[in-house]
Length: 105
Image (cartoon, rainbow, N blue to C red; front, side, top):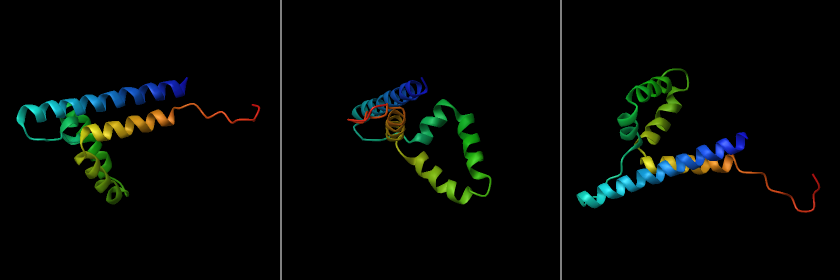
């Protein structure tokens, strides 16, 4: 049951990634210039409070020197790329284990 929910969440995140890609594509066609929306811009549009709290949580503590460059890289990445990678990772995490040929359970 948990694997099903993880796969479902992965599928929904993957679909959101493709929606973000279509939005960026439509915006590029309309303006004539290819521009990709960063994750930070998308996140600030939909939930600015959670973005500021995530930045504050990553900025505090002993691991801040490691977390800051990683967070900066992820927030500057295109939204569709982050969502597609996260969706594929969740779908792979929730997949059924392979059946071994010749092995009885």
